[in-house]
Length: 420
Image (cartoon, rainbow, N blue to C red; front, side, top):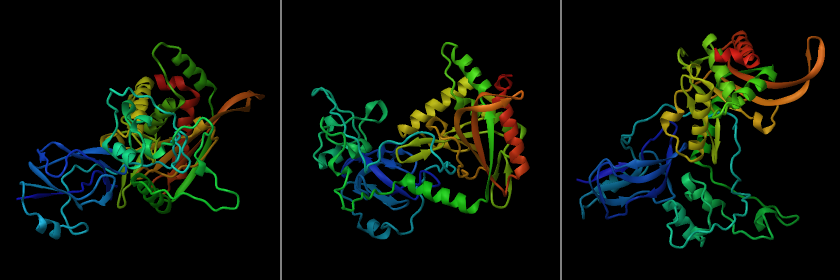
C-alpha cells in the first residue's frame, strides 16, 4: 500500500517549507534512509530522508515552491499503484499526522544583527564573469541550475557563495551580467518623476524573525540599563594574547567570557519566563547573533563559563561560517540562556536589542570609542565601550540587572581576572 510523505516540521518555529531540490523523479526507486529532497526551513536548508521503500509515485510540491507543514510532499508505493484516493483524502490543508522528524526547541532570534547581510535583491551588484574550464563540472545546486536555465543565464558565469564555492539560489537571484561601463543594473534608478519599487517575497526566516520579535517586544515588559566601560586594559590584554603564535581573540570573545562569568555570580539574570513559572538555569549557554542572507541566526556557545578565550573564539568563528553557508543544525542554535548582540564593529556607539525569548535578557554591545575620560583627577585620552542590557521585568528587577552589569564591567576592565 502506498505511503504519504508529509511536509516535515523541522523546527518548532517552522510553519511552511520550501523544496530547494528533489533528488528523485517520479518513477524512481526510493529506499528508506535515502535523501528524498532538500527542504528550506526558516533557519537552514536541510536534507530530508525517506522513511519508506518503493517507487516515487507523486510529487506534491515542485522545486522552488512552498507548502504548509503536514501537506502532501510525496507519495511512495508500488509501481503502477492507484493513489487517487490518497490524493483526495489527504489534500493539502486537510488534517494529517505530523511527519516523524525530531523537533528541536525554538530557534533563538536576536534583535540586531552583528554582521552585514549580502546586497539586497532590489539593488544587486554587477557580478564579474567567472571563468570555468569547460571540461570541469560546475558545482551548483539543482535549484540554482533550474533557475539559471529558466532565466537564460549561463551557470558557468555565476559566482558561487555557498560552501566550497557552490552556486546556490541566492547567487542566481543576485546575478547581473558584468559590464565594465556600469556597476549597477539599469533599473536601480528610476527616471525623474517616476514612481518605482521592487516587491520581494518574504522568506521563511524573515517571517519567523518578524513573528518572534513582535511577540517578545509586545509581550515581555522591557526595560534598559546602559553602562560605559573603560576598555584600555582589555585592549592591552587582547594585544598581548594575539601576540602569541596561533592565538586570535576578538573583543567579542572577551565579552562572551565576561558575560558567562558574570552570570555565574548573578543567576537571576540567567533565567527564563516560562508562563506559569520562572526557570533558573544552572548552566550558562550564550547565544551569539550572526547575520545571514535572509536575517540572522543565534548559534550557542554552551557552558561558556567553563571555556577559555581561544576555545570560545574557535567556536564562534566556526558557527559564523556555518551560519553563512546554511549548515547550522538545530543542535547548534537551541538551548541559549542569555544572548549577546554586537554591532560595535560597525561603529555603532550604543543601541537597544529586543529580548530573544525565552531568555530574560539580551546584551547589546556598542563600539569602542576614543574619548576624553577622567582618571585620578586628570582628563586623559581613553577608550570607552557602551553596553545596554535589555531585561524582561517579569523575571529580572532593576537592581539585579544593574548588579550583573557592574560585575561584567569589572571583568572587562580587569580582564586578567577572567584568566584565573
